[in-house]
Length: 81
Image (cartoon, rainbow, N blue to C red):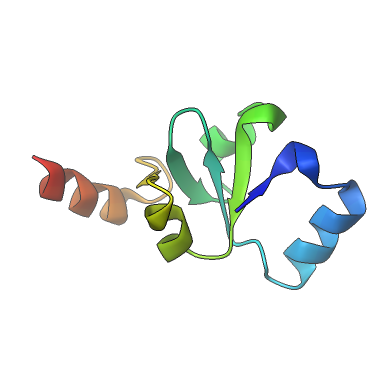
């Protein structure tokens, strides 16, 4: 997991290009989603974290975004009820 504010623009672009960053999350809300998610694009840089894959996000205690990952969110929600 990388925190957005700890990465330089160059490091961020390099990690994106090399597919080291595939998902982004909100550290405060503990929600992760796709990099293209409109909700994720609005989050503050101080709250944004990046993940290599879903397993990393889940291992860190994050849940799927209900907007950009509807199927994964439904599965998560059904498992927590």
